[in-house]
Length: 126
Length: 240
Image (cartoon, rainbow over all chains, first blue to last red; front, side, top):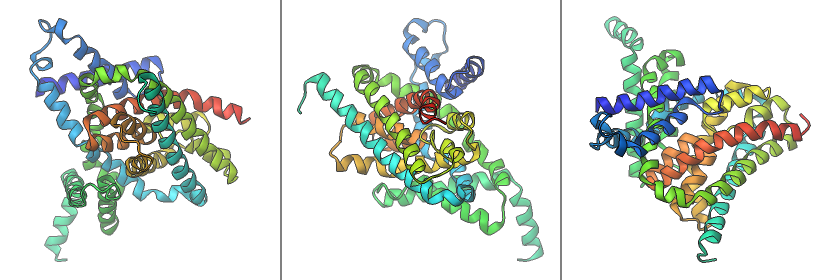
């Protein structure tokens, strides 16, 4: 478990470093996904060099535990927002309409285009 | 309250332990309610926990900075949890590779529709440009949204509030909305939820299925890039 957590933190750290150095519009942890994915894809070849956590299933167990409770990790930020709703100011009705409207349209557009192209590509039911 | 009780409270109110415990206990209560409600989308555990904890902070006159001294240990895990998304991505890599074209098309369409409609609606209301800039990147993960907003002349603090509100709203409405238009494919459902509602939507998609969560995570990462690149172009097109 310690090994797995160290691997995950090392990928995040590498991501943070690359984010700073490159100016890519991505947060360090998101770049870290790429590093961990690379390790997983290469783990067959790395078996002799890398710690056991990559291959004995413990990395999967730690990642699963983190992801199973992803929602709770947003609570501290959520509390901050509840306390600072006043920042929305006088424009809050327009902001509410735009937030709701653009979210609904965006969700529909994304889901529909995804299925449309998927069916076109696979010649499935129309 | 007795003197002894009061001095105990003064001691506890300054301990990070108190607020860390409140964070986890608040979420445990909220999540139990969500389970009791059969995971009904309106019973969103993040929203309920934040409201419960916010009420406790207000009732006890506790500043957010004091609360965050304890809550930061939970907040910190967001980074490692994001990196951990590589594991389901790896496990579902075959499905992901097969869905390359649908993802690319849905990413462009969804990202542009989301941003252009938000900007268009605010412009129609005659909202000032700085407020529009704060709203435009609201669907992407907070760190990127705040950077984009700042570069367009927006207010990063306002953006951070809009990002969280968008995440909670998207997490609540995405799955029922898609069910209503008979979109039941887990990949499409996850991708739309992650695109519109970043990490909070991704967390919601994982509660639905690992496949939906995987596609949500991909959409969250890719939409951060597309939004960062497209927002300045959109603002130039608007003549701002």
